Length: 137
View 1 (spheres, rainbow, N blue to C red):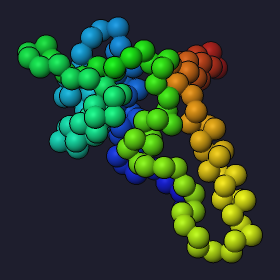
View 2 (view 1 turned 45 degrees about the vertical axis):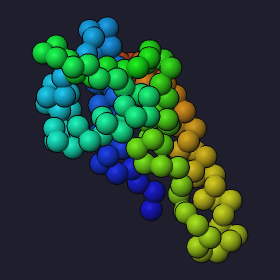
View 3 (view 1 turned 180 degrees about the horizontal axis):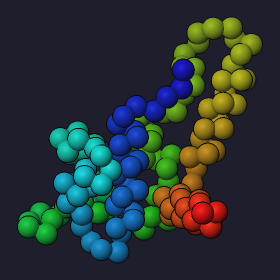
View 4 (view 1 turned 60 degrees about the vertical axis):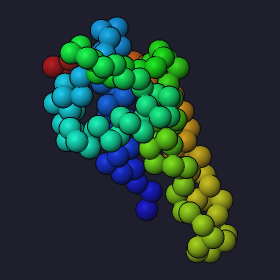
């Protein structure tokens, strides 16, 4: 079964939080953990991977924390997930009936396609959905 682990989910949530705070400078780990409901110790480990992968940068000191390396429009969801989870595969290896390979390939491509958008585009989608909900009330 295709699934994204807690590492991928929390990592994407952290990147989303940093994108929402992009104009405000560095954000402390505690703030990200509190808002997103991520265990702080686990978030620290995830942010180290994201830093090594060039998605986030860290700042030391009392006003230190983490920030995105670039603009949210330049960071793809697929890049974050791949960095944290590895290559996106629906049915890894040569298991099962070989005639099903095209199906597994199409499913993986569909997931890649859905994740091939920027963090900024995701934020726009979230805001649009929130506006629709507010309008309907």
